[in-house]
Image (cartoon, rainbow, N blue to C red; front, side):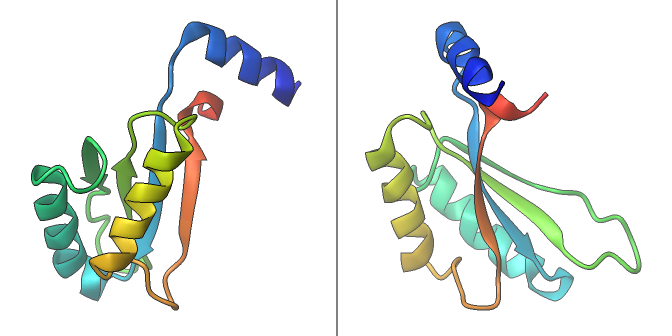
Length: 104
């Protein structure tokens, strides 16, 4: 089934994709500032977003950094290297890459 979905999405040429960081609330303003500045300078992907504040008790906030094409491994690797260079990847913060083709 997953292989079928991959072929369908590749055929449709919809290449949504994103790096996902889960950031502690006390770090979100700093992290988002770094992401926003790097995105504006075209140093990361073509867009980024941060999840809204859900109020007290929220453990982490999601920051997404979008890449241009998940099949372009050079670009995906370039973005993650830049994320590391500007301090977004640290040992206590989870990072994931999600291909939007599998988001329904």
